Length: 186
Image (cartoon, rainbow, N blue to C red):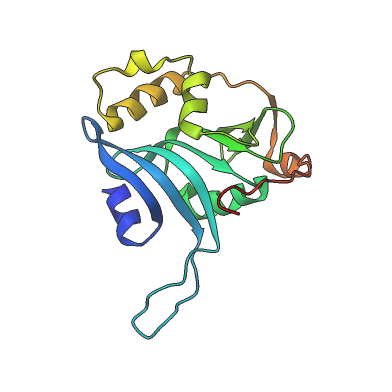
């Protein structure tokens, strides 16, 4: 199974769950590694990753990613995501990334697939996905966590996504400067 393979390779971190999401489908929520940390010792253990996508919501079958969503603090991380995971994209992949450093919604056309980019400086990807899909928490009542991902993915796969359509290179040229706030104990 694709998600278990990612997990065994250490590409899934801050794992909330990997669980069945319907017949031959699996859902994942957590963070995904873009750039692994250096090897730290002779046993092959690695330092923490140097780059990740956070709050990923993924639906996959045994071999392909069917739906992907996550939060990017910088749109420049999208090419890293495409390089690492793009080979596993299904032909009918639906992808929605929430991005801190864009001003307006965009639809990137890359590799024959459309990837929706939604501006989001601060928030929870799952809650934003529910809003984008126009679903209430009550619409998902009685479903397992994996089934909820499957339901959201079905709604969002229907598209169409809002925003200007352009190649990734043009989208990267439209990023804005943002200052992310840190939270926690002072």
